[in-house]
Image (cartoon, one colour):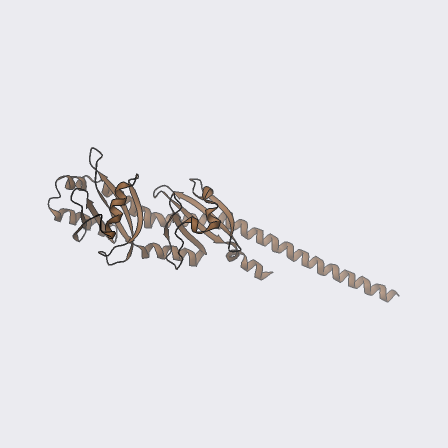
Amino acid sequence: MKIKNNFYIVITISVLMIALSISISFINFMVSLHSTETDLKTRSLPLTVDNIYTEIQKHVIEPNLVASMMAHDTFLKDWLMNDEQNRDKIIRYLDTIKNKYGMFVAFLVSEKTQSYYTQNGFLEHLSSTKPDNEWYFKFKKLQGDNEINLDFNNHLDNSLIMFINHKIYDNDFHFVGATGIGLKISYINDMLKRFRQEYNFTVIFINEKGEIVLSERTDTNIKSLSDTPALYNLSDQIIVKDSKILEYQKDGENYLLKTKYIPELDLYLLVEAKLDDFTKNVRQTF
């Protein structure tokens, strides 16, 4: 009888030890999981957004400042007001901008003559009936003084180019033309691709309407937040000037989204992280 009791005691202790071990492992798992998610929210994600913003300053904000400088340049304004005399001067000017700042193209459009110039010289006369020229006539009607858009230009080797356009006004604030620069999208695309591959973050930029202005070139047909119900439902929290970290579910997966408004571009930077990409090592360990 004593042996039988000892056997029950050993079994009971063994069961308790196994239960305790499982409980400790589960607690450690939950602590590690919580720690990983907390680190992602409070350190990794905000730090990555700051790194992206630094990259954006180099790749986008600087070109935007260059385009703004061109739009306020008195030489450029005077040249337009003097009936566009001596085209060589404006060609040299655009060529200097293009080479000095490493742009793909620097351009100028005259509202008076509808002439489109680049660093290579006169390109064409714009017309509202030409599909390739629609950007200019839409741009004129915008309330803002600048915009960023992506476009294919058949005159510029048909590459996808990010154009930064700025309006030019005379001394009486009359619209006299548009100027700006173009960057091959490969530069921006490579940057966004690197953040996805190295940091597991998906990066997009949207405007006030929730339309995607910049994103990595993929096979996706997503053009705005409205194409992703999970994000569209959070639009009121995403399109705000204050930076936020939001949690949501998409396709059965949990996600974190860090937002940051970039006033220099009047765009919203969105950095998306799928939690499983950061917690799978913890799950595999336990």
